[in-house]
Length: 330
Ligand code: UFG
Image (tube, rainbow, N blue to C red):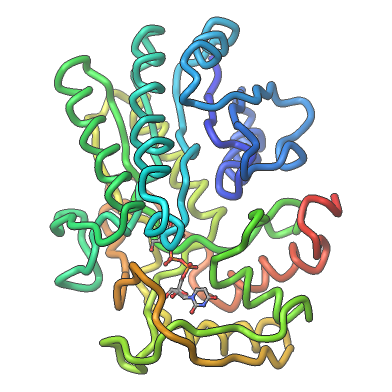
C-alpha cells in the first residue's frame, strides 16, 4: 500500500516525500509542476504530472496505484497573491479539494492529512493560539483553507472520511544536507528573500511595516522547520491508520519572532550584513501569529527537533549556497 503525496514536488511536499522514502514507505507523487520541480522528487518514486482539478487524470492514478492514504499539499499558498486574485484560491484550493475527495471516495480511500494554516485564524484574540480559537480569516488564502477544513468535516459526517488538518505557522529551512529546499517561481516569503540578500542576489530586504501592535512594531510570526513538519505528517498518517477520529493540530514552535528579529538572526546565521529598510504594510498581514502546539505534542507525540530560528535559517542557507538558482543548479 502506498501513500499518495499531492503536491510532492513543492517545497513542503518534497521534504515529506524524502521523509517517507527514508522511512521505507511506498510513495506516489502527483504534482502539476506549476510551482513544483520534477528534480525535487527522487527518480525512482512514481510521479504523475496531474492537476488535482482534473478528476479523470486523478482517477487514473488511483486505478494504477495501490493507495491507502493521502497527504494533500497541492494548493496555492501566497497570502498577498490571494488578496489580488481570490478566485484562483477558491478554484485551485477549494475546488481542488472537492475533486480530490470525489475521486478518493470513489476508490474507497478514506484517510487524508491536509495542509491547513495559521491564516485560518485571521487576527487572533490570543497568542499563542490554541486550536479552539475562532477561525475568522482576513485573506482569501486563509478563507479557502478554512472552507477545505469544513468540506472534510461534512465528508466525515456523510461518508466516514477521516482527516487530520495540520495548521502550519511559518515554515522555513531545508533538509540539513542542502539537497532539497525552497524554490518558488516568484519568491514572496521572508526567509528565502533575506537569504537572496545575503547571497548578493538582491540589494536589500524590505520589512513590511513597523507600526504593528507588537513589542518592536514589526510583524511577529512563528517559524517551524520543514523537516519537523514532515515528521508531524508521518505521525498524523499513523494516527489515522490506527483508527483515530478526525482532528486538527497547530504546528509551530510556540515562539514568535518579528521581521526585524528574523533579519538579525539571519545576519548571525550567515555572517553577511543583509541591508534592510522599512517599507509600507503588506495587505492581509495580521500583527502576530504564534502557535500553541501542545496538542500536537500531546496527542501525536510530536517533538520538533529544531527550536531556534538561527539553526532553521542555517539549514536554508546551506541549500541556497549549494543551489543559488534553486533546482536549475541541481
Ligand atoms: N515580510 C517582509 N518582507 C518581505 C517578505 C515578508 O517584511 O519581503 C514579512 C511579512 O509581512 C510577514 C512575515 O515577513 O510579516 C512573513 O511573511 P511570509 O510571506 O514569509 O509569510 P506569511 O506569514 O505571509 O505566510 C506564511 C505562509 C502561509 C501561511 C502563513 C501562516 O506563506 O501559507 O505563513 O502563518 F498561512
